[in-house]
Length: 191
Image (cartoon, rainbow, N blue to C red; front, top):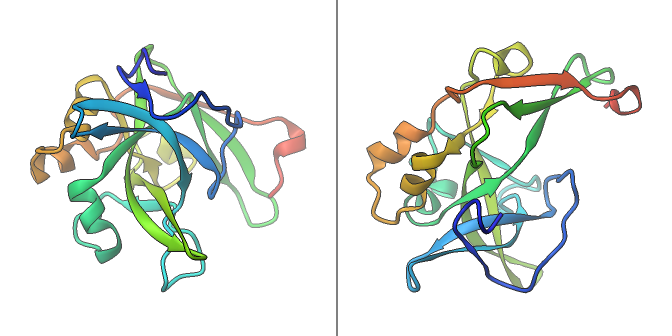
């Protein structure tokens, strides 16, 4: 991960689960402007606010720069979340099928995200949310949203502290590359 994304570890080497769920610690990459480096560290997935009991795991690309919960993070604290696959569910409640999505290009790619500091049970925690966008044609077959996926130069722009609002918003589009998906095994199909 460090080699692919030109980053250094912010802490000791770590382990994480192969499949990651909201609220769990996830490897993320941020730009550290003081040292002009990218750092990899663990951060909890999901903003925890005073006005909601639910974690805010996603921010919509269409309004991320306007919503009070996400606005400041969008302008000042962006990160990327490296991934190999992601999952979506489809079907009626109680009988949903889990689908695994994969990017077919052989490049480094990552989800666009934002992060912020939250006071939780008298402790300060850094937490992140992913940014979602309209689905591309393939993703739309299963779900009405998809994560904003960045590759190559898009990652550079997204992590650049001085990037303009318009250049950032231009990155939060349906993924233009090729995606494939397939249902997971029968033991994981029901939700």
